Length: 577
Ligand code: 9MR
Image 1: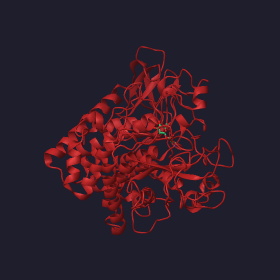
Image 2: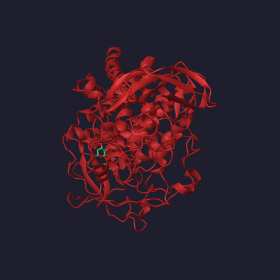
Image 3: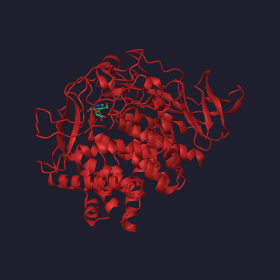
């Protein structure tokens, strides 16, 4: 299998912000510098220059040059770059490049809601569907779900609602928690950051059924998931009361395609875990402070859930999800919860101001450790300390000025590393070297971009901003495969992500993913049969295929679209400013 990589001139196929950096990559055998031409839409020459030879890129095994036309600030559509007789895909220069991505990336969450009909008036006829898992045959409902036979319990939970995790119909607390937290942070950023615009996230801004209820739409979306997370707690009076069940999913894996309401599998709760419990505590604590203004009773419910969950985790600090519990749903196992304790303590401290949480933050072994807090390969569901540190660094809290400066210094140290990684990368991606192309590598890139963006918000230093935008360039086409990993964005966008309903590749009556859905991205471990079959010998950043069955390179998930939404919001605010 030889991927069709199109033109060797690689650019951000959406475009470049007027006052931002503008760089691309050229794949060539040539080792000496070459002239480049930037063409305007009418064919006239807009700028010229020469490339910088970079040698062989370890992530792609391609010999590459870079080119830089940052000086051009004339807005317009239909620009191209020509080098050595080869012309790039077209792109824009402008300020308004990220506003539709902001709302599209957020719309992903409504599309993937469980327990509610997806309304044609909000998403269009092709994406409309009946409610899933509400106890209408052949579905079982998530409103009365009990524990799986291997670890029975004598209660049922009403765990209806929430978002489906990904291409499957599971609902998992660990990646569910980080996802809702990143939506909440996107909103919270508008309260804490000058130049961050709350209106595009506000009431009436998004296509959600709660429009017009007086609550910012992004909070309405977050609430759908927060209520589910809280419902996963073990009831009072039971053994392990206050702990959160790790996950709820089908008894057996289902095939594709399958609309959620047609899933016939029994639904089951899997055992509580410390990681899930702390994830719930962190997200609920953050939700509590943000809902205070809109619904104090709900805020109080969240606060209580967070406090009881944290206490339950302290009483049961080492209950880990079984790494082999992967039938019918993903395992999401994680046997280091130091980072989850840090995140939860941080959010609880910010929300409650209580000294016990402060002591847990300051006493944590990750506190002040840049690599432990912000791993070079990107934070994620198994490494959540970053979310705590980002909140501590940006949201008003009771740390002393020195302590706050310390948190910000740790963040800056990590961001400096990511910026250096982006500068060193042939394709400008803020991801170190060739070893980090793991399952969901695009989300690792995006989470590094979030750290960089917060560093930019806090310092105004454009080095950080430039590395974020360079990360967007990579995601939107400036990469070894010349693909935009976001559906609906760029000339060569991917469209066959692994999803049971957006399964047009398997059934023409079903849709492709809607615009704004990001694929997991290159994964050098070849962890699905299509990847194993088609991608043998691939260079790490090329281990990707736009095939619906390649779940290990081409799935979508809430925890990958959440940083996309956060970042699109940041980038849209940049354009406006
Ligand atoms: O995103 C998860 C990734 O970090 C893991 O390496 C991978 C294998 O355990 O699982 C990914 O999560 C998948 C989950 O297990 C099942 N639903 C789809 C998720 C995204 O592919």
